Amino acid sequence: MKLISLGLVAAAMSVTALSSQAEEKPLLGLVSIAATEANNVRYINGAKKAAEELGWEVSVVDAAGSADQANAAIQNFAQRGAHAVVDLVFPASSIGAGLDAAKQANIPVVTWGGGLGLTVAATNGSGRRSPNR
Image 1 (cartoon, helix red, strand yellow):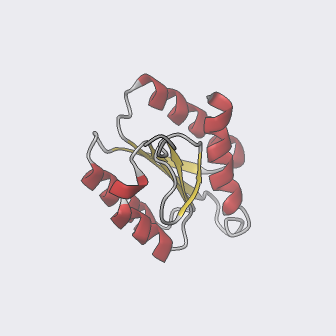
Image 2: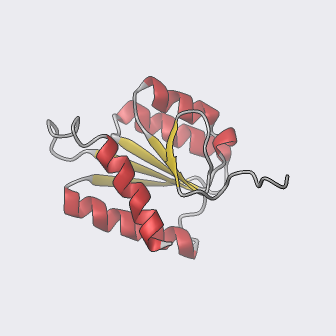
């Protein structure tokens, strides 16, 4: 799980590595469904450590289980010029407004548990529909 999580962070960072060289600290936005949940805490801490090693700034928004807050957070990251956004488990189908804002700003979004959807650059594989459904 740790390798997959850090892999998503690395994917988000590598997608934008070339464009980030002109700025001192590129911004990585993390949108968490519950920033105090144990798995999310581990993911956030790992992402912060990896980002720090690469000279990136990390901003975490706890959307408190609200897709509306998650959309607003992604839209805010787009306005702030984030270089990448990580969605921690909101289904891609519920964050369409945020994904659209990220797409308009050419910001890759990766998900941990949100599945693939419009403009999602990568996912860890969970959150997708089972072939039996």
